[in-house]
Amino acid sequence: MSERSGNVRRAVVIGGGVSGLATALRLLDGATQRGLDLRVDVLEAAPDFGGNLRTLAHDGWRLEWGPNGFLDNEPATLRLVERLGLSGELVRSSDAARRRFLVVGGRLREIPASPPAFLRTDLFTPRAKLRVLGELLVPRRRDLGRAAEDPATDESVWEFGRRRLGRDFAELMLDPMVKGIFGGDARRLSLAAAFPRMVELERDHGSLFRALAAISRKRRKAADAGPSGTLHSFREGMAALPAALARSLGADPRATLVTSRGVASLRRDGDGWRVGADDGGSIACDAVVHAAPAHAAAAHLRGLDPALAGQLDGIPYVPMAVIALGYARDDVAHDLDGFGMLIPTCEHSRLLGALWTSSIFPGRAPQGRVLLHCMAGGPLDPRVLDDGDGALRDRAVAELRGLLGLRGEPVMVQVFRHARAIAQYEPGHLALLRRIDARLADLPGLHLSGSSYRGVSVNACLKESESMAAAVLDRLAASGPRTEGGAA
Ligand SMILES: Cc1cc2nc3c(=O)[nH]c(=O)nc-3n(C[C@H](O)[C@H](O)[C@H](O)COP(=O)(O)OP(=O)(O)OC[C@H]3O[C@@H](n4cnc5c(N)ncnc54)[C@H](O)[C@@H]3O)c2cc1C
Image (tube, rainbow, N blue to C red):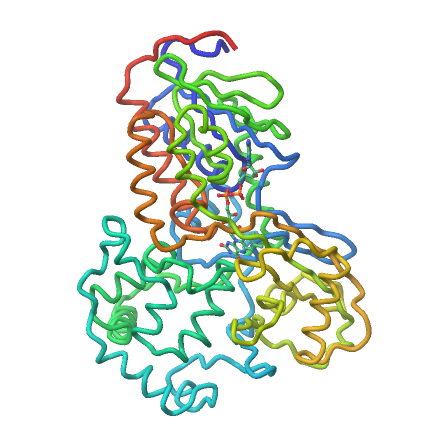
């Protein structure tokens, strides 16, 4: 096919993580529905597709490099799983995984999972419990929902927790929750950007407790309340998702998928775009979906729009190390009957937490063995990757030894190093996105997608892939045939 011919439109997707692959698939599905003649190229810098979704299987172990699972409450994810024929491959987390633990005072403590358990627990003093119950009386903030227009109103997760539920709850519950999801620091994360639902609940109900009561009344009334958010993965691990996406796209003659070909530059080309690859070649196209992290987009846009590049550089990422430890079952005294443990900042631990992976999903460890995924790093330990694999392993083993009753040495160790693991939506993130969108308005045909912007979870990325594909197709359908640019 010539680069640009007749009514054929061409889109280039930069980055073959789940965001890029799912957007490419949804672009082609949508083009079929709309009768649009579209070609899609996906350029991935790494040797494999999948980005953070990589599963390593060896000797009966199944190790996740990045995410371990996703909740089954995002319709876009369920639609994609169905579309790819992967429904039969889904595995649900075990019931035991509903039990979650904190490390407090150097001991493992179960997180109360119900109101009676909360009243019984001695994790909180009676005074702290009263303060939590007093949430019902805390007045609603008047400036909720204005974080994009007025960053001064953008509360951190920590500030929100302290205001509504008290300092102890923020310290023991919200701080470790943020570590578990973002590897982040609750004091430096925007509530509105990271947990927009919390803002909606306060705005719509005036109190989180009233909101929870209203939601559970609604669920009880609804004949089919739908899935409520149980962790799932795939039998073969999370890499099954990008593998199926790449298979499906690879079978479509309208798609061209290339690995080990990174994008090095982006420039305007007539009224379209020219995407320059790191091998010196280039592709002319009508639309670009930049689905690599914001720092990569910044590098590509520095020559074209330095202000936009500077804004994209303003979305920080934190480094993380994932230390997978395999033990003989008999060498772990704890029953590991749960999801895992998170460690609040006030414990001054050098771990963020640990998942008891083999208790969550079947088939993650060989018979008679258990698998733990320990996380270290984040904004409070930005030099975590200065340590070698041996030091990271020793650190994880030392922290867990007393907590879980580890005996002897691990029988399997694997360390995964993430130099830029997860985007941190700092206070001001939504206002930053608004400024980025304003500059993109002057760069028609360029779209920014992926976990740097509107949600870091796999679910958020897949939800965005649908809306992103629709926006790109709307624009392609509305714009006339493009003027020609120069040859590659
Ligand atoms: C340790 C860890 C644990 C996590 N746990 C969970 C979890 O349990 N549940 C959950 O929902 N989420 C989790 N996440 C978050 C989730 O994995 C990511 O947010 C999601 O995978 C992001 O997908 P993406 O496609 O947007 O980005 P990425 O996965 O980062 O993909 C971007 C792709 O772009 C490519 N690229 C970069 N530069 C270029 C270039 N110049 N040219 C071409 N290609 C380029 C990269 O190689 C990469 O393949 C976790 C993340 C980490 C790091």
